[in-house]
Length: 328
Image (cartoon, rainbow, N blue to C red; front, side, top):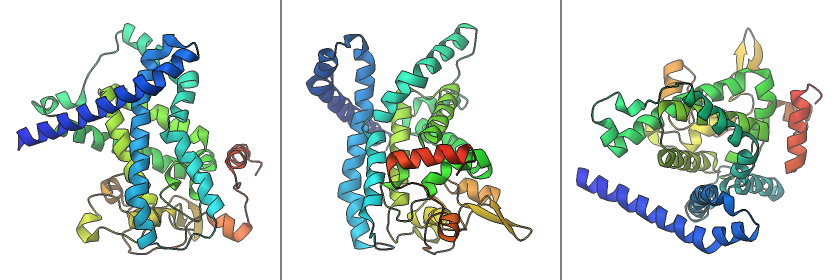
């Protein structure tokens, strides 16, 4: 069994490296040189890896998840323009444009700060080395890091729903009333920057390797695409408690339910089903809702007060800034 797992890991790793090298040599490297940025070739090669991941994710979405949405839809999707905006968000992220923007803004400062801390004696440690033999088992090590980072992501997600300031940004994600597989990346840029920096910091602190981090992000993103899909699918009584399904996550997006809790007869920020990949944290902290229901999605003030969340990319980003400043 160990030999089979090792073979599969090596096969996937080698295949990915081959695709990355091919795309880099045939497309990315000539383009970078043409633009006079040959000094960035090493970074361009790393970025090519993220581009390969994004292209593979989009292929799976179109070939696998798309047909599911057509076969088992929860609701019709009359407003195709709203979905096209979500497609734009997805392409910005999966084709590396967000990563590129992060590099030229925050990531360089992040790397410099991290290097400074290392030079001041910040210890290097690896979480998977705390258990004998785990670091020598790539699959087990991967699972350990996946569980830990998912717990951190659960905490971040709850914070997005319990802080008025953070919710002002995160509400954009919930404002989609026609959820599809493209809705996962429908986020305010400032929201994405903040969560990305925190998760990258935690990953670096616990010793996640660059290759592991790419794989963790890739699997997580693809799972979240499926969770947001317009599909009437759940995993059964047992499966629902092992991995988050579209049914479980749709409950989180349900109007007046997923992002609100009732306290003393009043609706306040809160909600249920904050898990990103694993429902375990919701079960542990009492925020899980396993009702097999498929309610309308969106934000309650859209329906009751007609609040404007914007109809295009730039309008949605600007409305988020106005909400953050308390002016919308």
